[in-house]
Length: 343
Image 1: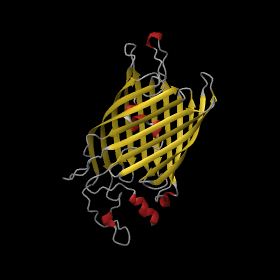
Image 2: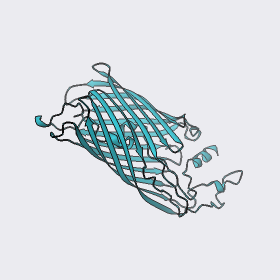
Image 3: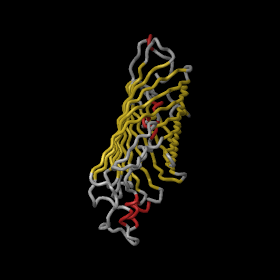
Image 4: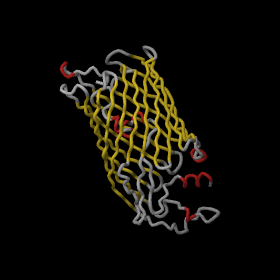
C-alpha cells in the first residue's frame, strides 16, 4: 500500500490546471541549448549535433520519458575579426506518468559572440519556441485526493475534477542568456553564464477554467570547466543552479578525462565521474557517469540512483540517461582563419 500511495503521489496533480516544470537532465553539460541560449555556437568545431534520452523511475508504474535533439552552427566571416554568429534548433519531448502528460517543444536559437581577445569571449543568445502540452487518459487511469475516503483509496468515489479524456494546449515562449568563455587551449577552458526562460509567462492550463496556469520564469546559472593536468589527464568540473517559482535545483558534476590515444584520426578519451542532484537543498539523486570521446563522436552514460523519500517505492532505482554528440570541423582557408581557440 505504501508503494501504491507513493506512486500515486508522483502523478501530475490535475485539478483544473496543470503546473509543470521545465525539462532537465543530469548531464546538463551535454544539453547546451536547454541550459543557456548563450551556449549556442560555443564549442570547438563548426557544426554540432546532439541527442539526449532519459527515463526516470522505470521500476514504478509512473515512469517519465524525456527525449531531446539539437543542432547548432557557427557563421563567421573574414570581414568580421571580432566575432561570429551562431544559430541552432532544439526539440524536446517529455511524457510523464499515468496521465500520459506529454510536452513537445520546438525552439530556434540565435547568438552573437564577441571576441574580447584571443582567449576571452562573451556570447549573447536568444531562443524562441512553441510548445504543445496534452494529457490523454481514461477515468480509471488516475487517482485523486477526493478518492481517498480517510482510510484508503476508493476508485468508485467521484474525482470532482473537470478534466476528462484528452486535453491539449499550445503556447509560445521566449528565452535568453549570456555566456562568458575563457579558453587557453582545447583542453583548458571555462564557461560561465546565466540564462532565463519563459519570459512570456505562457498560460498552460489544460482544463476549461477561469483560472490561469502561468509557466513561471526559469532562471539558471551554468558553469563548465576543463583543466589539463598532464599530457594524458584532464579534470572537468560542472555546475548548474536553477530557480523556477519556489523550486530550486542544484546539479554539481565532475569527471576525469583520460586521453587513451592522442593520434590524429584515432583520438580516444574516457570520462569517469559522478553527478549529484539536489532539490530544495536536499539530495534527490546521485549518479555515476562515464563518457566515450572518439574523434568527433561522443557518448555519455549515467544512471540515477534515487536518494529522495521516493526511494521507498523505487528501491533507489532512478533510471538511465544517454547523451550523444557529433561535431563537424571544416578546414578553413588562410584568409578566414581565426586565432581564437574555439575555431
